[in-house]
Length: 175
Image (tube, rainbow, N blue to C red; front, side, top):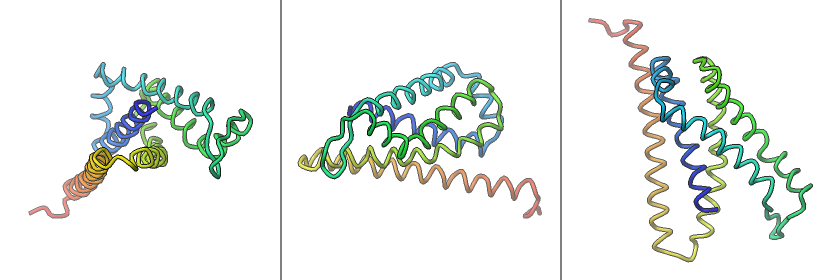
């Protein structure tokens, strides 16, 4: 499961970065992504990965109050309560963006920010597993902090670009 969680983290981080770039820089980036074969393959692969993740969630137990729950009915109920509202619309949004190739559907990708909840759950799992291994936990915490700094600096860069673009197009500080 550790490798699977790493794949999910990779997908969520990719879409977090890609969503910001497409929405900030506009249709040029979207068209460049659609013309790039690796990006399109990764998009289709992402839909498959997210579907497999839903399948795995429906087929693995969960802990509640220290008790492992393996009853399918309770697993389905737990999925519908906690994950359905985030996972299924995310799959639909990514699939629609690929199939329709419509730029304006990319604004719906803002919904994928809710997948950061999944990253938080995966982070808790890794921290629990690495609790007794000091060196590995230290490496994990440093990598986690670097990822957080990368994502936050990405967002700040996009915000500063958007502000600068607004100032440039409206001629606010024109000499």
